[in-house]
Image (cartoon, rainbow over all chains, first blue to last red; front, side, top):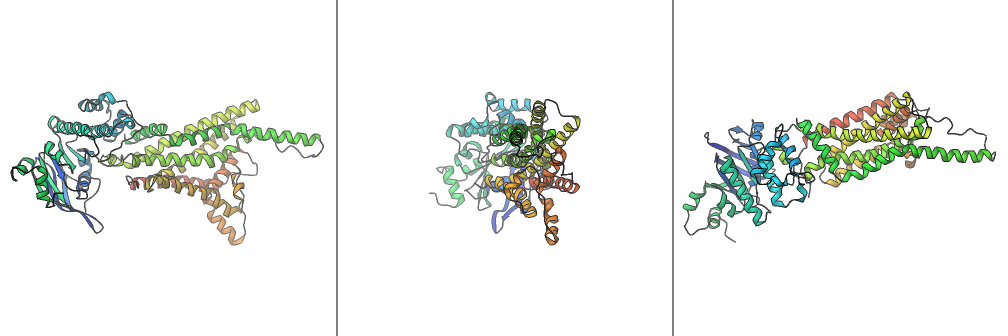
Length: 246
Length: 298
């Protein structure tokens, strides 16, 4: 691990009774990367993010986020990360501002108003400030979800299936936002996805998880270079995964 | 800061939530107009009494002659036990269910939030709402008694009214805290309301029935039922009497309001009632903070 490492995991395992959700996960993400963790449903992607975001504890192994140990320095880890869960609903009966004000204060912001306006401006969502979340589409809720995740200016952002359930327009908009957060604010982004198209368009580095094991990790460009030129990313994924393409 | 944020958020959420509004409305109306109901009762009985006297059918004195001023609001005691308790369960359970239903628990758990401070903030907001409702109810009663009697309550009556309000608020806050705990641990939204309501029914009807052999309908009286038994039965009654929280509340409320002169303020009732309130709130904070973020079953 170097000073440039944003996320590092060493031999992480997670057992649920007899079932092993993660089996000796080793992973490293440099600062400023957009890391896409690919895998089928049940591969262990959400468990990985839940461990990195301190939501659950690993059965064994160690991990650091921004140099902080997830077990011994969980408080510092939480201060330096943002998290967007897969199905964030927020408080539907509250307005965008009321939601963000509350979550901002829970993040330790004493007077979050200016920061909220700044973030919504960045996300081009300021005009919806006083609207209730219950009136929003899934895509709009995801934007509020991203806003809450970056309110406290985290260095690393974790996104769990961020484009899940979004319509094509929503997917494009969220992709632009993720790219913006990475390029403009220099955030390291770690996202779970099973959509190969997202990885191609966004990620600089990919990892493939299968049955709790990381079976592949490389930069996207090196991955594409190391396979046949005629292979699409989908072909490459199935070659690495070892599963037959449906 | 967490306490303050949680307090404000809870107030905002409770006022926006539609579920508790109906029961809050019913509680407010009934406790507020309980004095009118009490006055109508006295008036009707007195009218019948006067008819009977005019026909020389009785020489007994009017049972309602010289009733204390606060007698008119005796029904509010049972409204607190019945509607106030249910309102408190709903307010408490909805507060903790809110995070679970909105999937916001994960957003909170990935922040540096002191869960105990946050829960105390939420419970304090619920307590404030209950206090506010009780103040409105007491103020209405005060004004109505003034109108009915054409004279305001004396200072002793005002103290009694405030004392009764305080005891009612303590009962409802402790029940709201228990509702909050069930909202935190139950697997479904329905069971988070069902379990505390069953518990409420047990302490309101079953336990008093066991210790007093009273018909359940009689337990709807605002005055407490008298425990009866001898020997071993008496020992059992003494053992489980503190669990009859609603009967203890009725006894304390009646003693404070001076409705029934035969009921004196009992230290045992006061102690068991206070213990219930303290344990209820503390257990709720501990349970809710330990189990925070449990997923609801789909």
